[in-house]
Length: 279
Image (cartoon, rainbow, N blue to C red; front, top):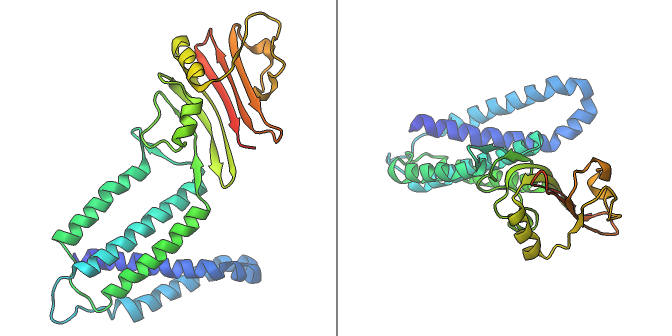
């Protein structure tokens, strides 16, 4: 466990110095331009060497030698916060949230937390001179990273699959508004960023389940049966009426700011199309 302890303390202190560097990096980049690509890694390497010389190397075992669940809890808590927040930022940079085997990846942090709890209880680290300070540093850095990731938090709705995954990012009240019970074969695009919320989707659903859906939600769909468009509000779904197979049901509730909800149910395709934005 001593090797694990050393690795975790390196992660904590290395992340702390990196976060500190990022605060001043914009000033360095503006001053040095191209040379910053060379200078910044050298500065970070120097900080890591200082970290090893002044912190890691001097972190010896406390006397008398014994185990400390308190230090273990602090260190593992800091690591979990750092990893969770770093992955949230990574998902923001990539532009989407990943699903694995139909499960939102954030659910995999639950077994990690359970494993950390088991390690704290059954295999705590030996007590070190600087163990508590490393743990507190990790929690502070993790909290800062969490707030940074929260500022950039993007709920990405993009999904293609037969059934919605466990812990799908779209809020439940929106799912109830958009997707009928019994729907399948989803193709969804959209996201929520700060005050902007939008989605465009299609899903297969039987006409029986569609009827239940529109009655339950109180949607006033207009039925177009002929080659003549019976509804003047076809535009918002970006289709020409002549491209749509008849019959189809159409619902349009747009606001003055351009936001609102538009849906079309194609009877021949047994498919519901939708478009939503809050403004």
